[in-house]
Length: 99
Image (cartoon, rainbow, N blue to C red):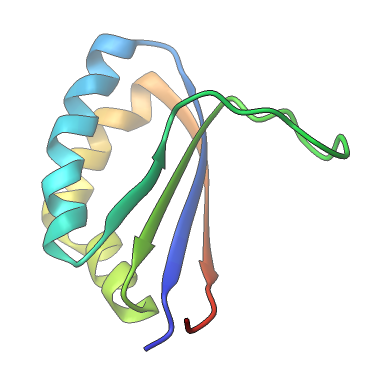
């Protein structure tokens, strides 16, 4: 199975409201086999100036279908609505390599 990753770059305007999103999103991510590999944390741009990251999140799913089922789940879309007014996010899905 080829893993699939979600990479997010997030700017947060209201951390208290965003924390509610994080608390509710985590069990949904996990219910689709997703695993947080990076969730905020310190980072450093090592090369280039394509963009200036803000808060980085990296989630691994078992495959693309699991990721898409998670994202399209009506329960996640309800949780996503919490995030939309309090943050700005660029979200990219990308296929990984088999180990």
